[in-house]
Amino acid sequence: MNLVLITTVLGVLMIVGGFIFILMPVTPAIPTIWGGILIYEEGHRRLGLDHNLLILVSLIAAGTIVLDYTLSREGVKKLRASSWGVLGAVIGGGLGAFIHPIATYLIGPVVGALAFEMLRGRDQVFSYTSGNYTIVAFMGGTVVKLVAALIMTGLFILRLQGKA
Image (cartoon, rainbow, N blue to C red; front, top):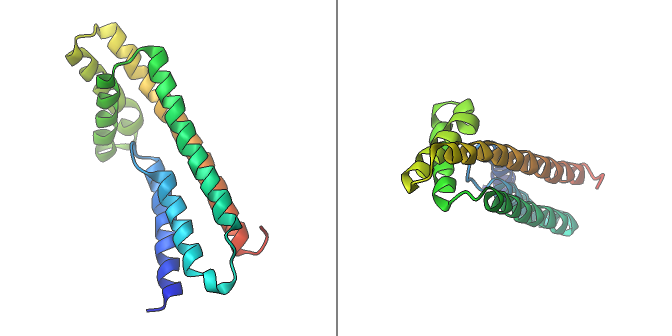
């Protein structure tokens, strides 16, 4: 098969997969989209595409990853949630993803954080507050990743059309 065809198909599949990953907790959505653009760019290098787009998209991806991690970490510190609560929220959200989309965002993280905080010995009120924060943090992180993914993909599409 032709290298250009392989990198085109793989790149597009990774970009689409990255958008799907945005809706799932603890998945590498932004790195997957970045990887799809990288693979496409490298496969089409002989066609005269330069690396300016790749540099810009890399900066956006790195900034998004750092921002998502920092905001989540600071929120956990502010709420005084334990690592058990965070782990429970991640596990609950991950399991919720296989049940129903609403369970991914609302039910799974709250139940997971609540259960794990209570296993750690925290009272029910504190555990419930920790569970509620996980919803806000996850939704906020999802919005940040979605905006970054749209910008990265939009720049990529504009570059393909010769407008960027």
